[in-house]
Image (tube, rainbow, N blue to C red; front, top):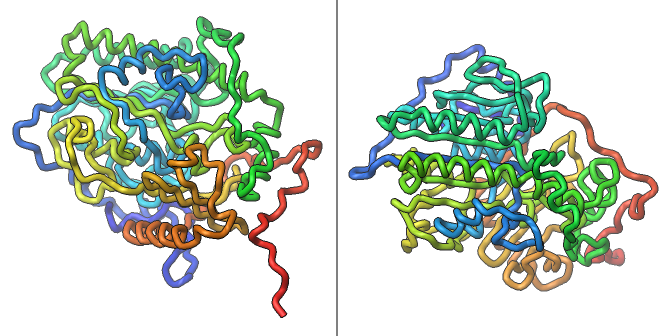
Length: 517
């Protein structure tokens, strides 16, 4: 990554304990940015593939029909991708929040490197999106859907020949903001998922075949508030939702902040500062996903008619997970599996066959993988790796751990700054700026993370080793600083005084010891 880029906004420096204020906007206006170097080494003998990346919002890893997380929820097209392609069963994001995750997808970098640490900041000028490399190498490129980096911007971004987007989260149903089509304001005509699919079909259908193409189709779905297409509304109304066992309060070893978050914007006792039945909420979520699955089926049908389907690399994934009551929480941000784990499916019969991949992959791996499919070597500095050897079933060196990071937001104060290290068996979760117990889980014995090993003696050495490894990774990637952003957005900080636990959860037992004499 460029060494002359610093964090936009305010930075709490990690060096000698000094505090420094830095404004990227001011710096950018006073100095011209260096010319981007977009030429990458080509891989000999590799035919560039057409590339379709379909990104959904808040789609948790098990919310697909073939995963059978519930007794309902059909996703026949996603099931087909898993059956005919590769299911990366252990796919994660390095930050479970929309904008940071999307920036990691486009840059191959961790949030502390690309600087998009919340939903309010854009990618700083000077960083390169991987579609810029593709465009420079001769690809036709398109972005269609939710950008959601930099507050309300829907301005066309570098690297795309075609641009269809909307402000912020957008709306499922037509609103006055409408769409931005190549810099021109256009009314939104209908249900957003269907309309984005139509734009995608129009653009793919107009390709001549003379040049390879890449499309990034980023749906608003399935972000809350969940509004299914009219044809799907009520599809699962009579189905029965299985509530998670660890939704109950008072689980031993649970950190205080997690227990207290039950009565908050992101908790099951006061969800979004209102009343919400988690089961009914999930039903609408799965109804909203139906139009995404149908839209992808339409795109695959078009590719098949054009004779391009089996030679097009299709990657489907979510930008982060979503909790439906696990640990007493809803939404994302936390380092629990349901928050940071996402669906990831990839199909391209001319490159690889059907299989399930067990290795841990992540959003930072998307950029180098798409470049590899284009016959290009990834630039130095990307943190991710090419997933194609895994997709082909090859024995290749791969990561033994993945780092996770989330930085506290003033407008969502329930969740502290979190760093985590997820290995194949153990996960260590470290909190910053809060007086509480950290977490350590044996994922093999405890996949739902109910038994915090640090709540009792006996696992301190393992936690220390994992903590040391976590901080070495941060040091090696220039991550030893905590971002401090100016206040932005509505503060969702209320509690319901009528709910149990409103006085606050007690300290864990390990914090209590009689005074020494």
